[in-house]
Amino acid sequence: MIAPPLQTFPLGDLRLVSGGVLADARLTYRCWGALNAAADNVVLLPSYYTGTSASHLPMIGVGRAFDPTRYFIVAIDLFGNGNATSPSQLDTPGRRAAFPRIDVVDNVAAQHRLVAALGIRRIRLVYGWSLAAIQAYFWAAMYPDAVDAILPVCGASRCWPQNRVFLEGLRSILAADPAFAGGACESVPEMGLRAFGRSYAGWAFSPAFYRDELYKVAGFATLEDFLAFWEEDHLSWHAADLNATLVTWMTADIATLPGHGGDLAGALGAVRARCIAMPCDEDRYFTLEENRIEAGLLARAELRPIRSPYGHCAGGPGRFPKEMEQIADAVRDLLEDS
Image 1 (cartoon, rainbow, N blue to C red):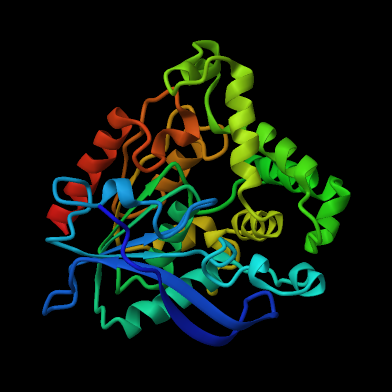
Image 2: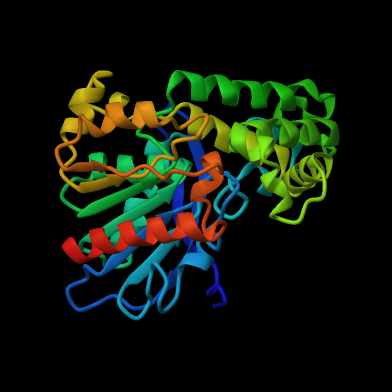
């Protein structure tokens, strides 16, 4: 299936929870299928870190997890990912360096405006991997009357402390390259991006993945070939965009939503949507232990771990057939029961 055209939703000057303003903000999105007469056959797909609204394409189609002949599927880009308003789109180094802090709350509130403009009355399922999983939790907490179910895969409702330490390390790597220049990026910080990719690879998979040389299954002859691929992959991203979305990720905490005062139990206890939480047992930064804590605080949650040596990447759309089968089963369970 070919991705449908990218569409743009203008938001004007967007006031942010940090107190800043995102000038002339624009969301971008793609749609598959058609909205039914009741306006409630909707599957919402927020985008994940280094993902876009086209990244879920391997999961969309007849016979796949998300069937556009049955559901209206809306995939929305994250601010900072290069499609929606992002530092890379700004025309001067100073404007790129001054790009404001954007929280998950800002993203989800803007997505809610888009959903309303599309005429959607109810969302059957919010599905997300990684940073998109965090957005799924926020959708259920911020708009409890609008969401039937959520399926967070390899994610959590907040950036827990070890996860933040991981992200702080990545940001420090970017900042250490003089070409990054606080996000101004007048030239490509190639040294920083290459080191960023190498460092990230060590967290994205499990010890068994490296010990058993599973990178060879993907066609890499040596570990060095695999790490070089991670370097090149991150060179395709604008460093200021990577930094902006890292900040969105690392500041995420559902307990800080208004009315909860930092109380995680209260924030998750207010969620009414059914949830199947699918952490990978070998995820290094969205851990099974922390998912177990969160599931215990939700009223209608099932903890359904993915047992996989692929670690955090076990949830990557279309990457690993066995893991994708387990995720598709959970999608069916939630859509058929909602």
